[in-house]
Length: 87
Image (cartoon, helix red, strand yellow):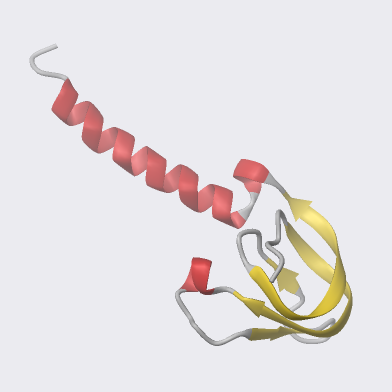
């Protein structure tokens, strides 16, 4: 399936199923529709169907970008404590 490059809101869809396991760990595909669960997240894969979305966030402002930023910040804090020896 195609990788979604940005966060967005579904505005048109046809039997759209998304693999969100990269973000949620859930292995089941999630059905997306205009009426129920129209949010699409970057880093997820389209497994079935097709659709159009309005992009709401990209890069570090997307959900996957926020997660990576937080993981990087946590790693930097740990490294800073170890690297500074008596400074």
